[in-house]
Length: 374
Image (tube, rainbow, N blue to C red; front, side, top):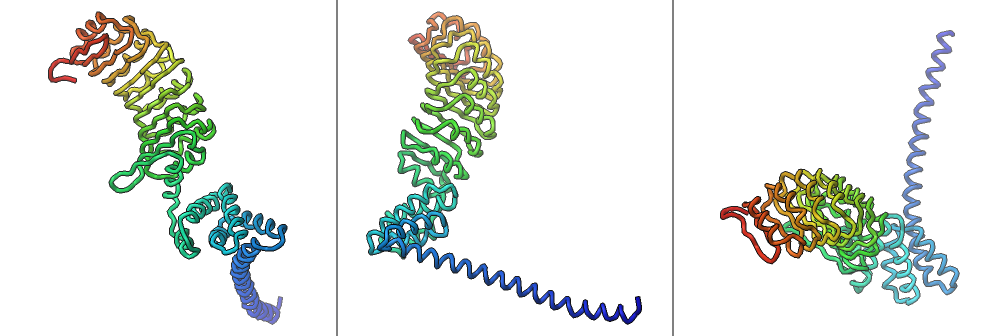
């Protein structure tokens, strides 16, 4: 190749590169302008659709409603403003659109629509509603929804939400899932929450800050749901009141190695043999086995391995004097409750002799621990 040919090629490249660069810049600029225009068109389209909610033609009103629901979150502010329209048809349809958006699978759309629904019921003008929607707190929205359905929350001195209680038949599955978004919840109480499904309860692991859980008559809970407990690394207190579970559920509880307090009340299925599932709870300090109708006493032998157990509640259980020989070996006990059990007064006296530092109640008497103890 001659030097003259090389020179001509370089000149062509030098000229073309800026041209291509300029074309690229123009293309990018054109794209930005199109994007901005698109956003502008979208908002203009939203406004047109909102206006169309008041169309004299039924079909157009229906089409506008459906289109606004599909648009989702970007349309919520305009639809909220439409609630305050002087046209009753527009107001009615705006409410329906917001209600449909509340059920959206898109989290942002659902949250904004739920906030808009609440704001619409508590403000008098579109301008006031605009400000409220712009400043709404998603976490406080969750709290309000819980409280409206008979639940309650508790805050600490720093105003952080530390306790959530979902209560009664109004407690919904979505409330359980949304409450898991509250970042500082240390205590969860589910009380007579008959609507909560096993699938919902399987999401218990979302509550990573939990230290205490109370389940009271959660009807649809399954054994496998209790398997979520071991995933909660801060959990130290668990209460199961009137929960239907078998030895498999108790085995899951036994794998929650962080537990220090375990309260199980009104168990119809757990037997002496099943207590072996709890012997791995090496940090346990307090154990309540209240109203265990199938617990006779031999299974308490498994609890001798709980070297830090200080309090044991066997009230209203079916334990007999067969349990005495095992209870006598639990030297760490400081409190033992035997009221309305089948252990006799003679058995209680034998326990006091073996456990002088333990306060024992049962068989119609209270035997105090030695002075200075328990």
